[in-house]
Image 1: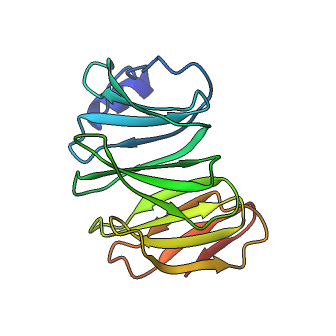
Image 2: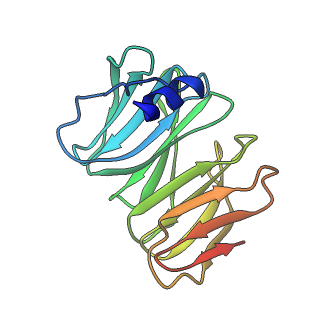
Length: 176
């Protein structure tokens, strides 16, 4: 009871909204910039768009040829990024869901994606133990592959001003 009261005070919902519809393990989730929608990627090879208000599935954004392990949404509301077992990142228009560009450069699964605060860059972390920073819409490689991790890169994040990337593997964190 105290936990629910705390949630109510802090502005969080008392009971979580449960979103059901994927048919295999869900690997990644991200809010779109409006805070009203959530995207998810799963082992059922789909990226789905959900209403964060009532939980209904808005649509299946795309069906990929393999597991979707990472999703990200840009802060400017224009882009969605997906990555997974096909070793590439796809940038989608967040409104039309049309493919904008595919980014290829990793030799193994994409595990993590993040857009910079200004939405001009995206960083990817992979099972190949590298990180690559890309131009969001042109697809140019801006940095990398950044090497040094001894295990797959599980998470990537930009610092707020976009001039550094933090990454982590199993037992290490690196700031580039």
